[in-house]
Length: 308
Length: 308
Image 1 (cartoon, chains in turn cyan, purple):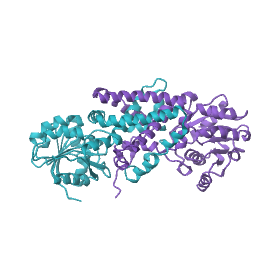
Image 2 (cartoon, one colour):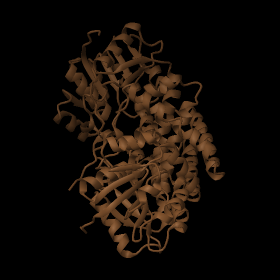
Image 3 (tube, rainbow over the protein chains, first blue to last red):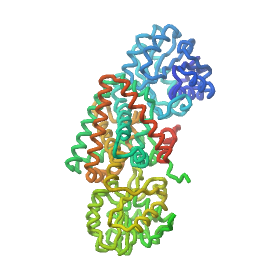
């Protein structure tokens, strides 16, 4: 593995992902100094109290001064304004990257602001939990998870290699990809799952004939699995859907079409079609487990024991 | 808690649920003898080898002979034929129940066959994992999970109380409910979640521009959460949808309507609507956790560590 060490790592935003990068980079000794910018005084205080950063600034400009690695870890909708603000203060030779869940829109939002002599490499660690904020991060978040880089012509090969080595040192497997393809792949593996999870939780909340208390009591029948990703950060996810519109609408169209087929099979009591569709899915879970992307334990390894 | 002890417990079907009942009943000393009927020689052999039953028969008739508690644990579609077959051999004073995920159809399938002097009480433990078969069961499966009984006029109050005590002794919380209301509640808390989980896994499997290997690699973005319930038993779930058609179609209609609203908000870049809907859902997860129906640990408590 390539030895990697940055002088000053500047994290713009110190939520779940930013603070996990801070912890992992600290643990692996990947930066001499780790600083962050955070909008709220609370986040800055918590980040400092937890010792995950050496300094926390309100202004992204202060954070990027002297930094040779700048990582945007705020919701995607804030990127353009932040890029414009920090651009004049970026060090020559610095690498600018991000952790946003969409990539085409990010290239457009950040790219134009990046000055000559700075390498810009959009990135996306496919990792996370349903928790938010600086206290939710942990150093192990990226282990065995994929980090996708979508380098364009604004980065040297050496810079891409160095950033890849940074993610690898935090435990990630690194892949490079075209931004448009990234957005299509993540639409189905991440964005649509979040959308339908948010949706069913909303549908359940709106019922007149079934009480909320009943939904909660009998959620172990399957519903509770959806509430985890539907508990993710609403601002982050609003921005994902606003910035990956085409791919999400395309995948949603396919999902709805397939659901109509299932609906029709139920209406016409076509057990054969139902059985055929329900039989396809075990193999995929098995492969996800074999690929180290999921726990093999039943029920996600949730504990089954008396609380008494 | 009422002391409960059956002479002979007959489990018709010895999959995940049947074998979990066998283990829990054995552990809690709820029956002097525990027997099962299973269609395949493999299931009978495994059940006996694991010591979860004292005897395993091919014929349900042999299993119910002398039994004072008979529990149907096969897919719902098999109930009518089994009920007809065992009816003449049921003991006077026996309780007949089931564990099916629908209840209205079960009343119609089993009820007419139950002779005078036998108490029939439909039941549904809202518990399970994505695994199937006799080896997948465990005694703790029902702890802190709700078991819904939907007694009709074919059972005495004493019998309902005795069956409730049986489930309580295995760790369940017991609730009684009207069969039609059960089917509506479970449509949203269990059946629709399974349907859309099966559906999205199918949609992902059918894509031309995204490879299956990509779906697997980047499944940690949310997709993998859906593969758990989509790995459930296809025969069981086919029967659920064939036997809870009205309630499922009603809830599916609402789900689709709500999804269309989200789709429109994405198309028209209505961030406010998206944010509002995405902000409603954290509270429900919190309540499910507070009600002891879900783990408070991030990411379902999945381990985050290096496998190297």
